[in-house]
Length: 260
Image (cartoon, rainbow, N blue to C red; front, side):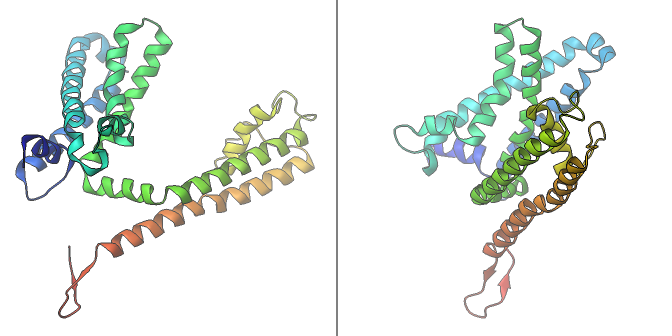
């Protein structure tokens, strides 16, 4: 095995038998936890004012490490069958985890290109995406990601149902309540906030129907909302069940189940 393959296997795969690979996983998980802690602490004015240099040094160090990791992953990605071929590295860049790796470091470098406060705030928020990098370093989290990948068509279908119901209830409540409450249900777009709160069964109480037709729509939306979220739950539960079943190994001689 050449050096490029060794680096790729070390950075990408989680082999419990390799002490160095396990150390790399724990090391990057620790960095992710540290960067999230610093993100939280810097929102405290006293901490930010008194320890700004320390927080900035920690952030810079972590970004440098993540940048080196990203470059190594990009350079060695062609060792994988998924990213082999002439455009393998481009495939890696635009893969889900490749994009997360890039977004984990990109905000830091973009801050040097703009002084716009809103833009800088958005970049700080994007830093939270580093949390998703933890999927690369945990088998359990990686398993969840695999199940989402296998069930993406079913999840997309349930999302389309959700969007359809959101649109229908928003339109319905707008026409039912607009004349009675023009300041609250001023448009279909503003009515979507009520639809989201109702379909998710949260019901903040800041907007509520007062007409008979509006209350009817509200009741239907609440009922649909309860059943709606059972769909993705059932899809994921089925995915976990199938994944666990595929991992079961039976002895060829006696047929007994062998724990993997």
